[in-house]
Length: 342
Image (cartoon, rainbow, N blue to C red; front, top):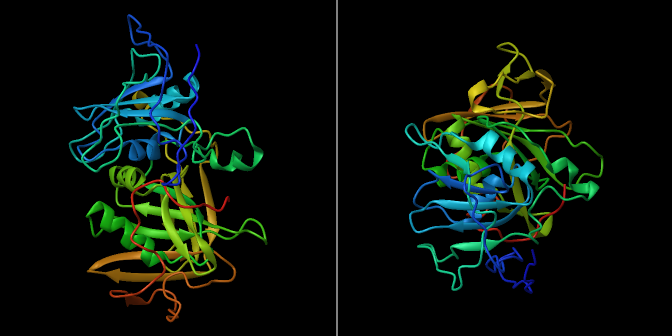
């Protein structure tokens, strides 16, 4: 099967904005496991980039097509990636009454439909991601750490964040995108793995799994400005291998993370075998925004401006952060900007 190569266009940070072209299409009598998936239940405001934001967690996405009825076709690089998507994303809740349904498509691949239509937000209804640098399953060794394959959880792992990360601004971006003031329970900033690290990593604890899934759809690859770089960072999100976290005791500076067994019928699997871990916290900040409490857990040895560079807060004190100014711009929900590899 021959593919027609096209020179990518520039302009939105994703070099694969052209539709996926194929010479022909094939049709199977039954939808057996293949690398193209049929998805519905993602909502009316879905677009190709948002679909990519979620499915790239489990394999390299080569193409996405949003159809008129908001049903979606997702083409993965191989069958194994498609199997991981079905295993982890099928029946994933996106609300109290809404669940994603992910099934194998009878199409072997997404073929060229000719003239590409536009969605209501002005983005193309079909996109090719074959050459996208945001795909995480590259054979290059420096991208291996981005393959954080885990079952859906209310705890998100974030990475590729700037070193001067501002916890309160990340929280505000999340609740603005979700329209839910109490969506975020806590933010944890992890210590650097290497002395010369260029990026920050951590955890974003959400109120529920469905809110975590929505945050992935809307905010994965959002732009973060940094005072230490003239280029924006692309914040990368994925489900964490940890499904719950708690403070070891009321006055303890130790956080305990646990992994709980998954419901067998959902076929959710994780590559991580560790069932629990403990982390020592350098600073605990309890804050209240718009009447909604949340906690910042900072595990770095040298704590920088995690919430407010002008505020020093003792452990377990309450503070009000309304009106605070930070470095995070209102993130455009597109795959744009330049990232700094973790």
